[in-house]
Image (cartoon, rainbow, N blue to C red; front, side):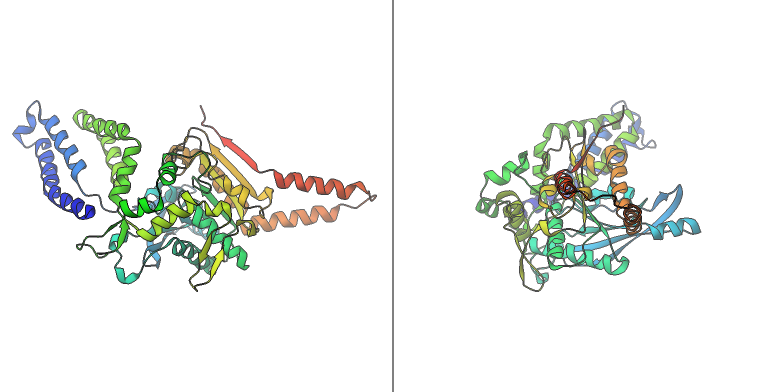
Length: 471
């Protein structure tokens, strides 16, 4: 019933929002005599703000038309590679007529970015995608709004999410022979599960997996998001936040966690900040600061656009990740597309390098939650594991904005490049040559003990780097 009330209210407000937009343009039009009155600019700004607060925000576009690769402008063609009922695998294919640039594009590694399915659209990672396109072939999971998915397409569970990720990894490996995976926030858990299951079966796993700001172990440094999930029972969530899609959508009748509830939760975390931001937008319009006003519009066009999540997926995520902590407790079983149930065992991962990234001021995934993957992936040698803590960065700062571009990305691209097939082959050859060049002089009984001690020390150490902003 709440969903229907919300949609009715939105439908009623829509014409008033459009009227406010027209009034804002009317009072700012230089050809209108009323626009020359002293209060005209304030009136126009007020109507513009009213329009922003009342309008319906649809899914934004990625809108990435070009990127620079080695100072050469490269065209981007966005296309759907795989279309699943609840997700599209989207590719950003790069084109150039410069021979040297084209050769470089072909040699660069392929990366699967797994975007979060937690209320916002995948376009929230636009900056992540655009930055990575400079040095990588990029694919991203573009999750669909559950209210637009017909009931005939079935339900969507957390297990299906894991199976989707495995299918996408296999698809990229079938084309390129290998791939790298980057997961941001929520998908760190299902991505780790997907790679773990592939490793347990003996399948080829990605060369690297990078996990950024995700709740691998939500028990560490719990945030307000974690506290809500632990303080309320599973039944409370099922009875209070799950509703059926109204009849005016393709997914009519589907049980979902509505996007407007998630958006309300986002705003409730920092209400003062959002109120001040809207007031600043009003003042910018009065001052004629078009650049600041446009920056506000771009941010909130993205932030206010939310999607519904299938109820089964949402509830299972709450229980598995935030209440029972099944991943870190070693009790998570996933049902595959063939109906077979398998236990998630991160310790089986061996041929995939691991990088974890956390923001010092992250108020969604607390300190240590992502780093916990380092303790779970014991089969990955310490030399193949890396942890990065970004000083002064909040949750969004580790994948978007200046800190992402200047502090995180240089470390990430270095990590991926060092584990490209050619780089790994070169390292292996160098090690073999160095070993062959050594000639044993005298055997020592203490040598095996020293070697074992050194190996144990290496296994216990994980390289950690703290990045701080430059003055």
